[in-house]
Image (cartoon, rainbow, N blue to C red):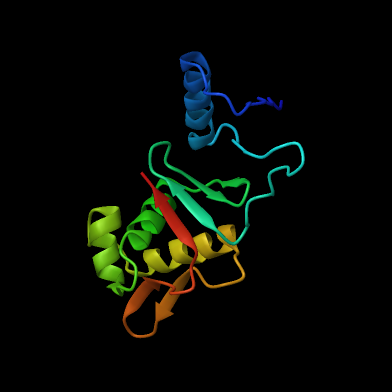
Length: 146
């Protein structure tokens, strides 16, 4: 279903402002998409190389697509995105993301591989630092929206 709201240049009423707030909340929850444009310039599709992490609804969007992630995949991506340019060992990630460090360290490798497969962006998302661990790639286009 698509809802089009034609807004004139005049000031919006409180009821219209509330409607726009509710539509924004719906879009932020991942249940819909809010696109702004006009009749002469319809909204363009979102860039598929940009990954948006929405912390309220705990969802991830890649372009216009909502990416289904497990709890751990989401937490791992959020943890790395909030700490760019830092390298983390597998043990550090197990401790910070999983909440314990007594699991097999290769568990992190499996989740990183799954994240890469699900997001499949042209530029690398998570970079392997051989002999150390992982970091968010410098080229990664990730935004965290609280």
